[in-house]
Image: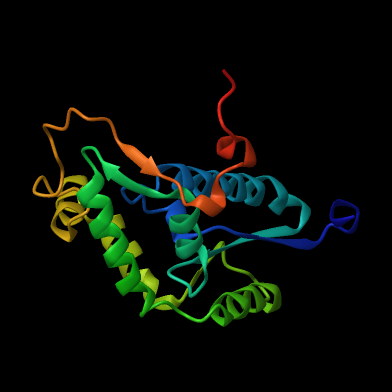
Amino acid sequence: RMLERKSGRIINVSSVGGRITLPYFGVYNSTKYAVESLSDALRYELRPFGIDVSLIEPGVIRTNFEATAVANLGTVQHGAYAASLGKYEKMSKMADRFASNPIVIAKAISRAVRARRPAARYVAPRSTNFILFFRAVAPTRMWDWTMRKIGFLSPKLLDLDATKPAEIVVPQSRRSQSDLRAPAN
């Protein structure tokens, strides 16, 4: 219908994770990069038809995303990344204290809907723009150094001589019923 009317608005919700990749988030970040790319392509292709495409990019928002992921995925007990992932979990809990209320996303969507000439991207909360700016202007080596200093990939936390493969302990509640049955002899 938008093509027939030669007007309309598409609003996609992604994440700043579509512009910044963090350790241990490769799969999540790749999906957000895909939404970013698709939204850019749609914006280019649909603009001649009067259709605007905007992208909402949430930063750290107060949700159950992190807690659910940690609870469902289990804990890495051994392996090269065990201590590093443990530090990440602690830092994540600390960052949750600074997370924004989800209402900031609703307000960003509202701005995109009401704008006479909508922007291509709306970052929410706006304070997240600082980290996006830093990532955009910092050379890759500086960004990598920052990631190491934060501690995610500090050699001090990585067991570079790990010979035992990572062991992931899945919480009992997440195991399938077939995992709980005795093996057939």
